[in-house]
Length: 149
Image (cartoon, rainbow, N blue to C red; front, side, top):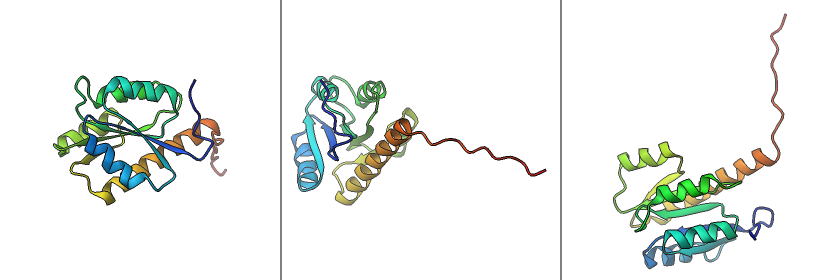
């Protein structure tokens, strides 16, 4: 059974990385906030967490061995309220950034992490996810403009 976090005010973030230092860094940044950090070392553990919890933001290492960020993006796209996916990589360049955006992920963050950039990206990814849920749950009526006669 999935634990609902959308209406409780809890903002759940999932960090997927085989590197413990990624999880530790994120925990130091997010540990004193209203953001709850879950961690997974590999793809299968991440999918299990995504099935149990409504997650707002996924921060995913580019290469998961086995698997990549595209596997997570594919999985999350099938969820009722897909989280925003932020990809991280030591080899962040314009080509990878373009690929990530074109495939539907939210952002690319270079490693080593810059605290300000990381917080900005997570916050904007969360706001995007929250907006998408609001639009889905309470779609605003479309305004029809009529030409003056």
